[in-house]
Image 1: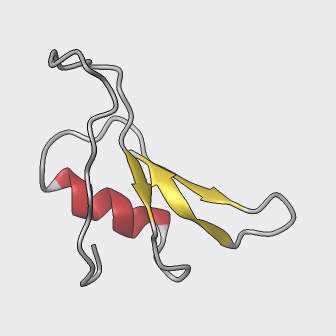
Image 2 (image 1 turned 120 degrees about the horizontal axis):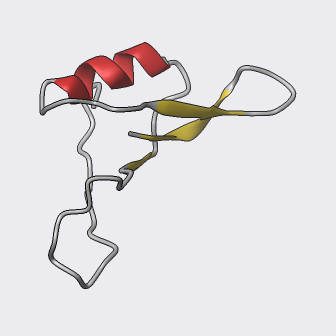
Length: 67
């Protein structure tokens, strides 16, 4: 993402796909926006939701998102 490698780890021993599962994306640069994350992942299929976590006292990114 944005020139950096992503590491995707399966957190379940059950190999079945869960349609309600979230993907945790970590180590996101602080300047990356929620829209940029959404746009990157929509290339791989339908994105149901995308939430970039921010600090409660500001809109500064915490460096991770749920897709």
